[in-house]
Length: 415
Image 1: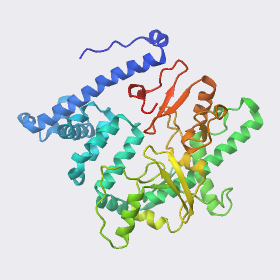
Image 2: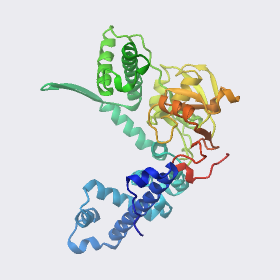
Image 3: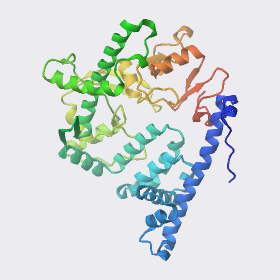
Image 4: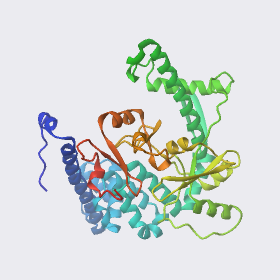
């Protein structure tokens, strides 16, 4: 494997965006091969037992001695080696995806389902953004090990706690609890954070007018988040601007999982869910929830039936029912964990027409693109276009027709 020559700054400046991306992917390909090679070697050293020749207690200690790895790093290579020994098809995965799947595969309770899940778990690694792939792994693990997942949620709820302490000139707030409670806390907190942002923006507009930008805001994002926490406590005392705010938590739950949980909660013995078929019981951020906790939460909130096709596109919003609710725009924003711009993980604030309204683009769920303000403006003013393939993946194109990002290496399905 010959090393690549890295161009200097001037050479990089002279390259097109597509050429720079191609060079990065070529380097990343070498990195993937080296990572898989090291993990495979660790697995074979362990199987051959040669680490014992120098008196090492185990292959992790051997790796730490041979390569000066940290203990967590050595443990990751051991898990990755075990995964590659079982799934040679995983050798071409991205480094982050490889270690994430290896961590799931190390759960002994999911071992009986791993072979049947190989096509899904390995295949989706090259099709999904890493954050979405992580959500898929958590959902698969919860379906393959429902008892273990339920026990984890029960323990998190049982061990809930909160402390507020002061050390010198600083105060520290620390809390932990169950995922469903956390989803409600996050919804409330982010609403207060957004209110603080709007307050700063309005104040800045009065001073700077059209020249106003985020850089001119009176407070940093960290300062606003702390002040938002203070506002939450003030609202609890009846003096906050959002004292009457009622949180709306959107929970995504597929029909099969819902029916399975209902039957089990009523004392039935439903057939186990097939973990190789994607199931969802999660917040819009991809946090996995305990289905039984969601059943309890369903009794005190509001929900709207959200029907998704296989690509995750909204095709129907049912009538309002007693659970959680929200209009079409809110649902489209809720279903998007982040802006649809390539590599952007800022939360979406706007839904714009993918096919422009001026070009007869309909105001329909399939034609709605969730974007942050920056990418919404960038696409509109720089001539970039967007398409969505039949699997629900976004593809972004420069004015010269070249595609932005790693998806350019994939075939454009349904183009």
